[in-house]
Length: 387
Image (cartoon, rainbow, N blue to C red; front, side, top):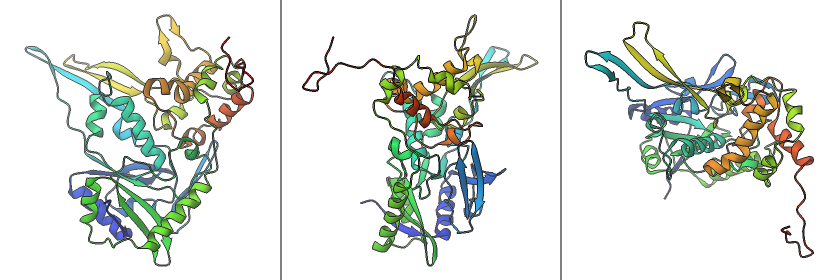
């Protein structure tokens, strides 16, 4: 049976301390430079207690509500990807010895515990797992696999969807799906903020069993949590029609709307940098000035940069329309062909952090409204006619 119970802020402090004592590097939401960002935390005093974020297309700001909630925000510009798939990562290094080149064994990465993973973010980690972990004839990325192995995930059900969220369209929230070790539902009572904690793994069971500050969950606790999440589900403000989206986008590669989007797009790559699933990278070799060593470095890149699609003679995507089309059709269409899933989880980050507020859901809707694919003849009985 899945373990569960109720903790307050002191109980969450005990939970974080137990993870740290167990050898985990605990990462959670913090406030820095006017945004919610993920960083190492040692307790609830590091969390954005009483803060929320207001989002709009091309807009983001923090607001202090003072309600005592620790997870009252939505998502910021960072995702957990930066810990599992770092922005700059040395994938090989070596030094020159008397006998020639010698490979330097990289240090073991930390064993992470992620605190406050939203449903959309949990889905994003699952998408990255499909990209970077071994599957079929695809080998695992050793750097990602080393960071992902042993990671402990404390998910949080999202009680306050943001203005740009469309997780319900993508089936990723606001209630967190599978893949976590623990999931918390934060509610406000007359006695203050409490968290319904439910385990999703044997490790989660063991951690909950160790908490002295936890009390058994009562029917009222479960009902209050269910009501909170039902209200959240009903208030997700944004949506995207995903019906037939794979064929819709790939069947409209010459649609004039790509040019209309490009007229507004700055090509800044913000959308790919904040996206929790984008994985494009560039590998460069660096040599020490004295010639005594070298390293191979993988850094984040973007399909919005001219250099990313450079082949001998120049970039194959010179136009901004071609680069935006590549990003959107890959994420929402050809990603299915490669990995069997969508590359979008509906977190809305790309909308929020686009300087000109381009909304991918609106762009899909515009193409759907003027679909240029030829109509398929239909017989009287409703079946398609193959000509």
